[in-house]
Length: 389
Image (cartoon, rainbow, N blue to C red):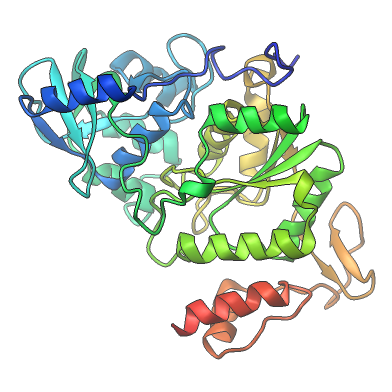
Protein backbone atom coordinates (compact mmCIF):
# COMPACT_ATOMS: atom_id res chain seq x y z
CA UNK A 1 0.00 0.00 0.00
CA UNK A 2 1.32 3.45 -0.91
CA UNK A 3 2.29 5.54 2.10
CA UNK A 4 1.19 9.17 1.93
CA UNK A 5 1.96 12.39 3.78
CA UNK A 6 -0.59 14.65 5.44
CA UNK A 7 -0.93 16.54 2.15
CA UNK A 8 -1.94 13.36 0.34
CA UNK A 9 1.37 13.01 -1.50
CA UNK A 10 3.46 9.85 -1.53
CA UNK A 11 5.87 9.67 1.43
CA UNK A 12 9.59 10.05 0.66
CA UNK A 13 11.75 6.94 0.72
CA UNK A 14 12.59 6.08 4.30
CA UNK A 15 9.79 8.34 5.57
CA UNK A 16 11.65 11.66 5.85
CA UNK A 17 12.67 14.10 3.12
CA UNK A 18 16.31 15.00 3.73
CA UNK A 19 17.58 18.58 3.47
CA UNK A 20 21.34 18.98 3.87
CA UNK A 21 21.61 22.47 2.34
CA UNK A 22 22.85 24.93 4.95
CA UNK A 23 21.02 28.21 5.53
CA UNK A 24 22.80 31.50 4.88
CA UNK A 25 24.38 31.93 8.30
CA UNK A 26 25.47 28.30 8.54
CA UNK A 27 26.87 28.44 5.00
CA UNK A 28 28.99 31.44 5.97
CA UNK A 29 30.36 29.56 8.98
CA UNK A 30 31.08 26.48 6.85
CA UNK A 31 32.89 28.58 4.26
CA UNK A 32 35.12 30.04 6.96
CA UNK A 33 35.79 26.59 8.42
CA UNK A 34 36.52 25.09 5.00
CA UNK A 35 39.58 27.31 4.60
CA UNK A 36 41.20 25.38 7.48
CA UNK A 37 40.23 21.86 6.37
CA UNK A 38 41.80 19.25 4.10
CA UNK A 39 40.54 19.74 0.54
CA UNK A 40 38.97 17.10 -1.70
CA UNK A 41 38.34 17.83 -5.37
CA UNK A 42 35.21 16.00 -6.50
CA UNK A 43 34.72 14.31 -9.84
CA UNK A 44 31.67 15.39 -11.90
CA UNK A 45 29.83 12.25 -10.78
CA UNK A 46 30.63 12.88 -7.09
CA UNK A 47 29.56 16.51 -7.40
CA UNK A 48 26.21 15.43 -8.89
CA UNK A 49 25.78 12.83 -6.13
CA UNK A 50 26.49 15.43 -3.46
CA UNK A 51 23.80 17.76 -4.83
CA UNK A 52 21.31 14.89 -4.97
CA UNK A 53 22.05 14.05 -1.33
CA UNK A 54 21.82 17.68 -0.24
CA UNK A 55 18.41 18.40 -1.78
CA UNK A 56 16.84 15.14 -0.57
CA UNK A 57 16.63 13.42 -3.95
CA UNK A 58 18.65 10.55 -2.44
CA UNK A 59 16.57 10.39 0.77
CA UNK A 60 17.09 8.74 3.21
CA UNK A 61 20.84 9.31 2.62
CA UNK A 62 22.33 12.26 4.52
CA UNK A 63 25.84 11.64 3.24
CA UNK A 64 28.03 9.25 1.32
CA UNK A 65 27.52 5.51 1.83
CA UNK A 66 29.26 3.73 4.73
CA UNK A 67 30.71 0.22 4.51
CA UNK A 68 27.70 -1.63 5.94
CA UNK A 69 25.37 0.10 3.48
CA UNK A 70 27.87 -0.41 0.66
CA UNK A 71 28.00 -4.18 1.14
CA UNK A 72 24.25 -4.47 1.63
CA UNK A 73 23.54 -2.38 -1.50
CA UNK A 74 25.85 -4.51 -3.60
CA UNK A 75 24.61 -7.91 -2.45
CA UNK A 76 20.97 -7.32 -1.50
CA UNK A 77 19.93 -4.00 -3.09
CA UNK A 78 19.14 -2.67 0.38
CA UNK A 79 20.58 -0.29 2.94
CA UNK A 80 21.49 -1.78 6.30
CA UNK A 81 18.18 -0.32 7.53
CA UNK A 82 16.31 -2.64 5.16
CA UNK A 83 15.17 0.11 2.78
CA UNK A 84 15.59 -0.70 -0.91
CA UNK A 85 18.71 0.93 -2.37
CA UNK A 86 20.29 -0.60 -5.50
CA UNK A 87 23.51 1.40 -6.04
CA UNK A 88 25.99 2.65 -3.40
CA UNK A 89 26.66 6.40 -3.43
CA UNK A 90 30.37 6.55 -2.74
CA UNK A 91 33.01 9.20 -2.13
CA UNK A 92 36.04 7.28 -3.38
CA UNK A 93 39.41 9.04 -3.10
CA UNK A 94 43.02 8.15 -3.79
CA UNK A 95 44.17 8.89 -0.26
CA UNK A 96 42.34 9.32 3.04
CA UNK A 97 42.71 12.87 4.43
CA UNK A 98 43.71 13.59 8.00
CA UNK A 99 41.08 14.87 10.41
CA UNK A 100 37.37 14.22 10.79
CA UNK A 101 36.18 17.19 8.72
CA UNK A 102 36.93 17.81 5.04
CA UNK A 103 36.01 20.47 2.49
CA UNK A 104 34.50 19.21 -0.77
CA UNK A 105 35.09 21.25 -3.93
CA UNK A 106 33.20 20.92 -7.22
CA UNK A 107 35.13 20.40 -10.47
CA UNK A 108 34.83 24.12 -11.25
CA UNK A 109 36.59 25.01 -7.98
CA UNK A 110 33.48 26.05 -6.03
CA UNK A 111 33.26 25.03 -2.38
CA UNK A 112 30.29 22.68 -2.46
CA UNK A 113 30.10 21.19 1.05
CA UNK A 114 31.78 20.27 4.29
CA UNK A 115 31.70 16.65 5.35
CA UNK A 116 32.12 14.93 8.69
CA UNK A 117 34.14 11.77 8.04
CA UNK A 118 32.69 9.07 10.27
CA UNK A 119 34.23 6.08 8.52
CA UNK A 120 36.99 5.18 6.07
CA UNK A 121 36.92 1.86 4.24
CA UNK A 122 38.36 0.02 1.25
CA UNK A 123 36.60 0.52 -2.07
CA UNK A 124 35.82 -3.08 -2.93
CA UNK A 125 35.44 -2.75 -6.68
CA UNK A 126 35.38 -6.52 -7.10
CA UNK A 127 32.15 -6.53 -5.09
CA UNK A 128 30.57 -3.42 -6.57
CA UNK A 129 31.15 -3.84 -10.29
CA UNK A 130 29.68 -7.28 -11.08
CA UNK A 131 26.74 -6.76 -8.73
CA UNK A 132 25.75 -3.26 -9.84
CA UNK A 133 26.53 -3.52 -13.56
CA UNK A 134 26.10 -7.28 -14.17
CA UNK A 135 29.35 -7.18 -16.12
CA UNK A 136 33.04 -6.58 -15.57
CA UNK A 137 33.69 -5.49 -19.14
CA UNK A 138 35.92 -2.40 -19.03
CA UNK A 139 34.25 -1.13 -22.19
CA UNK A 140 31.07 -0.54 -20.17
CA UNK A 141 31.12 3.21 -19.26
CA UNK A 142 29.92 2.62 -15.70
CA UNK A 143 32.48 -0.10 -15.08
CA UNK A 144 35.25 2.08 -16.51
CA UNK A 145 34.16 4.96 -14.31
CA UNK A 146 34.28 2.88 -11.11
CA UNK A 147 37.62 1.33 -12.08
CA UNK A 148 39.07 4.84 -12.41
CA UNK A 149 37.87 5.89 -8.95
CA UNK A 150 39.98 5.87 -5.80
CA UNK A 151 40.53 2.81 -3.63
CA UNK A 152 39.50 4.46 -0.35
CA UNK A 153 35.93 5.49 0.52
CA UNK A 154 34.94 8.21 2.97
CA UNK A 155 31.55 8.01 4.64
CA UNK A 156 29.58 10.51 6.65
CA UNK A 157 27.01 13.31 6.52
CA UNK A 158 27.49 16.39 4.36
CA UNK A 159 26.41 20.01 4.75
CA UNK A 160 26.09 21.74 1.40
CA UNK A 161 27.23 25.36 1.20
CA UNK A 162 25.41 25.86 -2.11
CA UNK A 163 22.59 23.98 -3.79
CA UNK A 164 23.79 24.43 -7.38
CA UNK A 165 27.55 24.72 -7.86
CA UNK A 166 27.47 26.38 -11.30
CA UNK A 167 24.45 28.72 -11.46
CA UNK A 168 25.78 30.37 -14.63
CA UNK A 169 26.59 27.13 -16.46
CA UNK A 170 24.64 25.95 -19.52
CA UNK A 171 23.28 22.95 -17.64
CA UNK A 172 22.17 24.77 -14.48
CA UNK A 173 18.60 25.55 -15.69
CA UNK A 174 17.74 27.43 -12.51
CA UNK A 175 14.20 28.14 -13.76
CA UNK A 176 13.61 24.38 -14.05
CA UNK A 177 15.84 23.19 -11.20
CA UNK A 178 13.31 22.29 -8.53
CA UNK A 179 14.17 20.35 -5.38
CA UNK A 180 11.98 17.47 -4.20
CA UNK A 181 10.41 19.80 -1.64
CA UNK A 182 9.57 22.27 -4.41
CA UNK A 183 8.05 19.70 -6.78
CA UNK A 184 5.96 18.41 -3.88
CA UNK A 185 4.73 21.95 -3.23
CA UNK A 186 3.94 22.35 -6.93
CA UNK A 187 2.00 19.08 -7.08
CA UNK A 188 -0.01 20.04 -3.99
CA UNK A 189 -0.78 23.49 -5.45
CA UNK A 190 -2.02 21.85 -8.66
CA UNK A 191 -4.10 19.33 -6.71
CA UNK A 192 -2.13 16.41 -8.16
CA UNK A 193 -2.17 13.39 -5.88
CA UNK A 194 -1.02 10.93 -8.53
CA UNK A 195 1.88 11.91 -10.76
CA UNK A 196 3.67 9.97 -13.48
CA UNK A 197 7.29 10.73 -14.34
CA UNK A 198 9.26 10.20 -17.52
CA UNK A 199 13.03 9.80 -17.23
CA UNK A 200 15.07 10.74 -20.26
CA UNK A 201 18.57 11.69 -21.37
CA UNK A 202 17.51 12.08 -25.01
CA UNK A 203 15.02 14.22 -26.94
CA UNK A 204 11.48 12.86 -26.82
CA UNK A 205 10.39 11.19 -30.06
CA UNK A 206 6.91 9.95 -30.97
CA UNK A 207 7.21 6.63 -29.12
CA UNK A 208 8.27 8.43 -25.92
CA UNK A 209 5.42 10.90 -26.37
CA UNK A 210 3.00 7.97 -26.66
CA UNK A 211 4.24 6.49 -23.36
CA UNK A 212 3.90 9.85 -21.62
CA UNK A 213 0.34 10.33 -22.81
CA UNK A 214 -0.67 6.80 -21.83
CA UNK A 215 0.60 7.61 -18.34
CA UNK A 216 -1.26 10.92 -18.31
CA UNK A 217 -4.52 9.09 -18.88
CA UNK A 218 -4.22 7.32 -15.52
CA UNK A 219 -2.62 10.01 -13.30
CA UNK A 220 -3.40 13.61 -12.41
CA UNK A 221 -0.26 14.99 -14.00
CA UNK A 222 3.00 14.23 -15.81
CA UNK A 223 6.50 15.26 -14.76
CA UNK A 224 8.98 15.25 -17.65
CA UNK A 225 12.17 14.89 -15.65
CA UNK A 226 15.30 14.80 -17.86
CA UNK A 227 18.68 13.97 -16.41
CA UNK A 228 21.10 16.89 -16.82
CA UNK A 229 24.02 15.67 -14.72
CA UNK A 230 27.06 13.92 -16.13
CA UNK A 231 26.33 11.75 -19.18
CA UNK A 232 28.60 9.97 -21.64
CA UNK A 233 30.33 11.46 -24.65
CA UNK A 234 28.05 11.54 -27.67
CA UNK A 235 24.81 12.22 -25.77
CA UNK A 236 22.91 15.29 -27.02
CA UNK A 237 23.72 18.32 -24.80
CA UNK A 238 21.23 19.13 -22.07
CA UNK A 239 20.52 22.68 -23.29
CA UNK A 240 19.49 21.35 -26.72
CA UNK A 241 17.33 18.67 -25.14
CA UNK A 242 15.62 21.20 -22.88
CA UNK A 243 14.62 23.32 -25.87
CA UNK A 244 13.21 20.22 -27.53
CA UNK A 245 11.17 19.30 -24.43
CA UNK A 246 9.72 22.77 -24.14
CA UNK A 247 8.82 22.88 -27.83
CA UNK A 248 7.03 19.56 -27.47
CA UNK A 249 5.10 20.65 -24.36
CA UNK A 250 4.08 23.95 -25.94
CA UNK A 251 2.75 22.28 -29.08
CA UNK A 252 1.58 18.79 -28.14
CA UNK A 253 0.81 18.57 -24.39
CA UNK A 254 -1.70 20.19 -22.04
CA UNK A 255 0.45 22.63 -20.01
CA UNK A 256 -1.83 22.47 -16.95
CA UNK A 257 -1.27 18.71 -16.77
CA UNK A 258 2.45 18.72 -17.58
CA UNK A 259 5.56 19.89 -15.71
CA UNK A 260 9.16 20.10 -16.88
CA UNK A 261 11.96 20.11 -14.32
CA UNK A 262 15.50 18.74 -14.35
CA UNK A 263 17.26 16.08 -12.31
CA UNK A 264 20.95 16.91 -11.63
CA UNK A 265 22.06 13.29 -11.35
CA UNK A 266 24.94 11.50 -13.03
CA UNK A 267 24.24 8.55 -15.31
CA UNK A 268 25.78 5.23 -14.35
CA UNK A 269 24.36 3.17 -17.25
CA UNK A 270 23.63 0.37 -14.78
CA UNK A 271 20.48 -0.81 -16.49
CA UNK A 272 18.05 -2.62 -14.14
CA UNK A 273 19.57 -1.38 -10.89
CA UNK A 274 19.66 2.18 -12.13
CA UNK A 275 16.00 1.94 -13.13
CA UNK A 276 15.19 1.15 -9.50
CA UNK A 277 17.34 4.06 -8.31
CA UNK A 278 15.58 6.39 -10.74
CA UNK A 279 12.20 5.23 -9.41
CA UNK A 280 13.20 5.85 -5.79
CA UNK A 281 14.49 9.31 -6.70
CA UNK A 282 11.15 10.17 -8.33
CA UNK A 283 9.34 8.89 -5.23
CA UNK A 284 11.29 11.49 -3.26
CA UNK A 285 10.18 14.16 -5.73
CA UNK A 286 6.55 13.21 -4.98
CA UNK A 287 5.91 10.98 -8.00
CA UNK A 288 3.60 7.96 -7.65
CA UNK A 289 4.01 6.28 -11.07
CA UNK A 290 7.30 5.86 -12.93
CA UNK A 291 7.54 5.04 -16.64
CA UNK A 292 9.99 2.21 -17.30
CA UNK A 293 10.52 1.66 -20.99
CA UNK A 294 12.69 -0.57 -23.11
CA UNK A 295 16.30 -0.97 -21.86
CA UNK A 296 15.98 1.77 -19.25
CA UNK A 297 19.39 3.24 -18.29
CA UNK A 298 21.10 0.66 -20.47
CA UNK A 299 24.04 0.94 -22.82
CA UNK A 300 25.16 -1.33 -25.65
CA UNK A 301 23.81 -4.87 -25.34
CA UNK A 302 24.73 -5.51 -21.71
CA UNK A 303 21.12 -5.87 -20.54
CA UNK A 304 18.06 -7.65 -21.85
CA UNK A 305 15.36 -5.52 -23.46
CA UNK A 306 13.03 -5.71 -20.47
CA UNK A 307 15.43 -6.53 -17.62
CA UNK A 308 14.86 -3.05 -16.17
CA UNK A 309 11.15 -3.80 -15.88
CA UNK A 310 11.47 -7.34 -14.55
CA UNK A 311 13.72 -6.28 -11.65
CA UNK A 312 10.79 -4.47 -10.02
CA UNK A 313 9.05 -7.83 -9.54
CA UNK A 314 11.89 -8.88 -7.21
CA UNK A 315 11.39 -5.97 -4.80
CA UNK A 316 9.38 -5.44 -1.62
CA UNK A 317 6.43 -3.55 -3.07
CA UNK A 318 5.50 -2.03 0.29
CA UNK A 319 8.93 -0.46 0.66
CA UNK A 320 9.15 0.45 -3.03
CA UNK A 321 5.72 2.17 -2.86
CA UNK A 322 6.05 3.86 -6.28
CA UNK A 323 4.26 2.08 -9.16
CA UNK A 324 6.37 1.15 -12.20
CA UNK A 325 4.56 1.60 -15.50
CA UNK A 326 5.98 -1.06 -17.80
CA UNK A 327 5.74 -0.29 -21.48
CA UNK A 328 6.76 -2.36 -24.48
CA UNK A 329 8.52 -0.87 -27.47
CA UNK A 330 6.16 1.42 -29.39
CA UNK A 331 6.27 2.70 -32.96
CA UNK A 332 4.08 4.26 -35.63
CA UNK A 333 2.01 1.78 -37.65
CA UNK A 334 1.06 2.77 -41.19
CA UNK A 335 -1.92 0.41 -41.19
CA UNK A 336 -3.21 1.46 -37.76
CA UNK A 337 -2.39 5.12 -38.52
CA UNK A 338 -1.13 5.61 -35.00
CA UNK A 339 1.29 4.52 -32.31
CA UNK A 340 1.16 0.83 -31.40
CA UNK A 341 3.02 -1.75 -29.36
CA UNK A 342 3.21 -5.52 -29.33
CA UNK A 343 0.32 -5.50 -26.85
CA UNK A 344 -2.01 -3.36 -28.93
CA UNK A 345 -1.48 -4.26 -32.60
CA UNK A 346 -0.25 -7.28 -34.57
CA UNK A 347 3.19 -7.15 -36.13
CA UNK A 348 3.11 -6.77 -39.90
CA UNK A 349 6.29 -6.93 -41.97
CA UNK A 350 7.37 -3.43 -42.99
CA UNK A 351 4.39 -1.75 -41.32
CA UNK A 352 6.07 0.10 -38.46
CA UNK A 353 8.48 3.04 -38.62
CA UNK A 354 11.83 2.13 -37.06
CA UNK A 355 14.95 4.27 -37.36
CA UNK A 356 18.35 3.52 -35.85
CA UNK A 357 20.17 6.21 -33.90
CA UNK A 358 22.86 6.18 -36.58
CA UNK A 359 20.31 6.81 -39.33
CA UNK A 360 18.67 9.64 -37.38
CA UNK A 361 22.02 11.36 -36.77
CA UNK A 362 22.90 10.97 -40.46
CA UNK A 363 19.64 12.65 -41.49
CA UNK A 364 20.06 15.48 -39.00
CA UNK A 365 23.64 16.11 -40.13
CA UNK A 366 22.35 16.35 -43.70
CA UNK A 367 19.68 18.83 -42.64
CA UNK A 368 16.91 16.30 -43.27
CA UNK A 369 13.91 15.88 -41.01
CA UNK A 370 13.27 12.30 -39.90
CA UNK A 371 9.72 11.19 -40.78
CA UNK A 372 6.93 12.91 -38.84
CA UNK A 373 5.87 9.43 -37.71
CA UNK A 374 9.19 9.20 -35.83
CA UNK A 375 9.63 12.70 -34.42
CA UNK A 376 7.66 15.92 -34.40
CA UNK A 377 8.91 18.33 -37.10
CA UNK A 378 9.46 21.19 -34.63
CA UNK A 379 11.74 18.95 -32.56
CA UNK A 380 13.55 17.75 -35.67
CA UNK A 381 14.27 21.34 -36.72
CA UNK A 382 15.81 22.10 -33.33
CA UNK A 383 18.00 19.00 -33.56
CA UNK A 384 19.09 19.95 -37.08
CA UNK A 385 20.29 23.31 -35.73
CA UNK A 386 22.37 21.47 -33.11
CA UNK A 387 23.73 18.91 -35.57
CA UNK A 388 24.84 21.55 -38.05
CA UNK A 389 26.30 23.98 -35.49
